[in-house]
Image 1 (tube, rainbow, N blue to C red):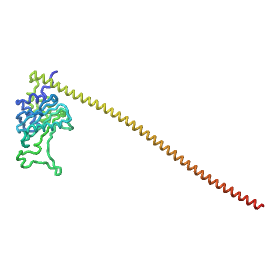
Image 2 (cartoon, helix red, strand yellow):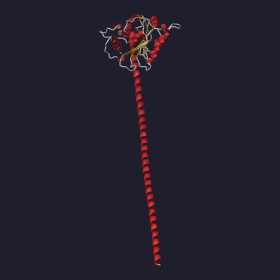
Image 3 (tube, one colour):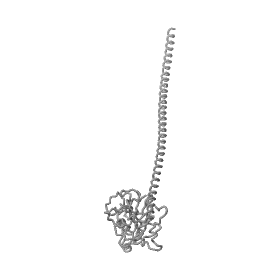
Image 4 (cartoon, rainbow, N blue to C red):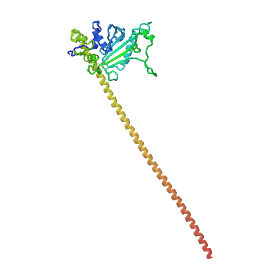
Length: 332
């Protein structure tokens, strides 16, 4: 399988090429364009936080450097998604701080940390493709920004509070639309496409175009690089497969849940129908009861009327009897 892209991926370059002092110019160019200042790297540092593990071999590559201002810069390339990636960034920056402050040293000796993450997955939610994170303190009541005192500025230099805390830069490469609006975008174009156009002017890209040429690698290194690319493709394929299987399982579970919901709805409808039937029966029974009560009342009325008629008849019989008796007395 032939190598299609002529330039070496940035993560491979970080791992195998940019650690060499003679190639610092490439990384310095990238950092200068991103941080908007002239960056000079003094040395590459080894830290527990940038030691490669077997798991990270194709997934994550990082580099810790110190610049001429004694700031520590973490450059990390992440190929696959991690839900807790932001928490890991916080942990990584905190670990670098603790590793570079000796016991007994004053906290004023803590070095500025700049964490730069080049990610090839959709991290969080947002429309942009380059994000910067920093720490500042805003007044809850007065809405002002906390500043350093004169004494603190004298001790630390003319800096702001936010310059004490770590800064985070997130470059979401896959979000980049391949439109180069400025020199930083030229670097994003390279990071996404492993290609540097002839008209690009960003710092470090001219040197990158020359030194990251795949064809300039020794044949053995080209073979190793090719295997690296194939492994990246395999990892991406595995991630896609897992994602597909998870989605399939999710759809299956949704269908099962919907079936259970439909079954429950049918049962609810049946219960509702039974309740309505019972309600109808109850109404019919009440109607029948009311009808019986009316008939009972009518029967009672008829009985009372009959009783009254009987009294009238008895009264009339008695009257006739009296008249007969009277008539008989008169005859005699």
